Image (cartoon, rainbow, N blue to C red):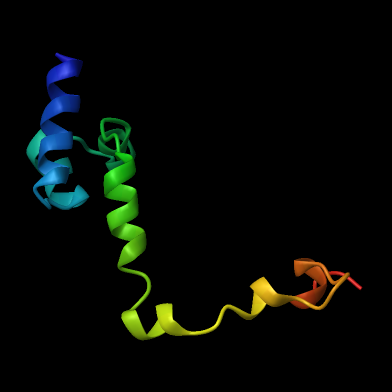
Length: 81
């Protein structure tokens, strides 16, 4: 039975159904239980991450990639002296 819930929850996730709707359809009282049934694929993670940057943001120069010689990223962001 658990296999069927996992499969159904993942199909709903792929179809764009949100976690709260899944929780209600499956009948869980706690959303954390519903989240246990969900497996997020690498493709789904990449799609989600791609929405975090706009095309204009992607064109900006990545200053952290060109740090002065000998300076660490921690120093650059002020977390280490």
